[in-house]
Length: 373
Image (cartoon, rainbow, N blue to C red; front, side, top):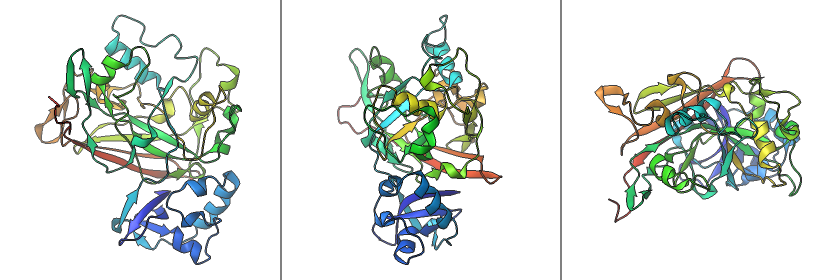
């Protein structure tokens, strides 16, 4: 794979690197040696300074970085969160996912909310609980019903793709869909862990809160958009509002893979999402809200039409009604303590072939609250 990240090596201070397969280019050292000029931003401990340089510099510097030889084995580095996350927004852009949840939670009623095909639905999450891949995920506690307080019994995943903002926008000035690449530097893989029982009790009328805000895991290497080819996006009906119209309707042909305790249980296809990353950015700024360097917005759960293409265990187990077989004769409906989930992905590359987008992994630790019962 190729991507920018932050790492520690042999007790060093955090430094910026560029992953090439199973090795890393130490960009801090390369800049000090005069091999690349990133205006000193490669001497910082996060990617934010580099991201703030903007699209022309990303492309020019990227061409130089691609010529540098990696010097540090990947196995010898410890990856850190690559950006200081300014804001976090999560969308709900897969029609298959939204319809599946509608059928599970609202049987006998229309599966999609009436506004779903008119705008990209989303919610504002907590930037402070975005964590790098490998960080343990502590089982959250909360109200699962009236008087029913304790650890979540229906802990779930959401397999998503996240987009990292580099160039900020001005308050009061919406970002048009055609300006997506002017603001977004690259992408990461996202697991938006979800406590379905806590979420179900709290979400009327204002939506997700404690059922989502405890942890969102991201992959450690940010893959630049320049590395990826595009594919056509699905047709939309009815016609969308003017601010959501795209000069070219395109998306990315990302194929995700969800591994649960060593068993591949699903392969969600990103290209089928109804709302594209460009439309998501246009919508989250449509009211004049600005984006800042380091903002992260996620696609929402990626699910395809088939049962083995869904991006959540809520769908895979049909609301907990059907156990999912795993390796060694085990089975699950939702996550047990000690379970590990790894989401990986590949996508068509701008130069042909496929690009490895890395992986995001997390293991579930027991609840810590003393009165949890």
